Length: 183
Image (tube, rainbow, N blue to C red; front, side, top):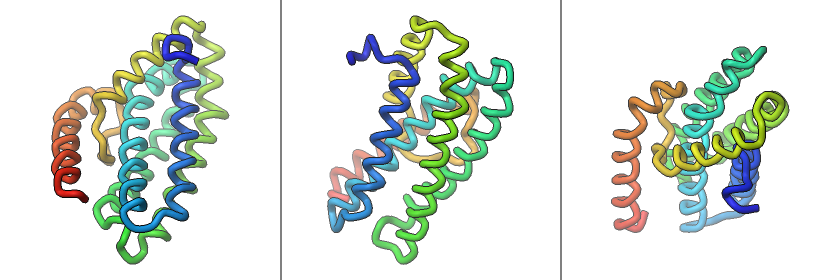
């Protein structure tokens, strides 16, 4: 499937699968591979949630029954961002990291299942294929310009649009410095 054919639900489900694979890789990764895999996971979770918060949640909120679904997802995302932020600050070699990572994995996978079972069907039932493909294009753009680290408290489209660009610049600068230092 090309990007032009992929709709927003397919795009987000594909990212969910990538997230599942990264959690699986974390189970056996060691040394530099563990650090690299964890950085990939942090980045993907951060950009994925930004795309959902900017594109998907506002659309679903306006649908019949959508507000309660979105509110529940935002609560899950906030808790996951807090945990991911803690993990990011302590690093994969810290004591207790694995226990917190398991908690994050369980929370994130449950969140993805809720989206796939509750939120995505609302999108498909209420929007035609052309609209869903346009949303995918917008979600890809949001992900490409999103912060690369979790920012708990920034879970709304307005907050992401206002605070996201400066946070993305800072995050991407930190990523470049970390990469240059080999960390």
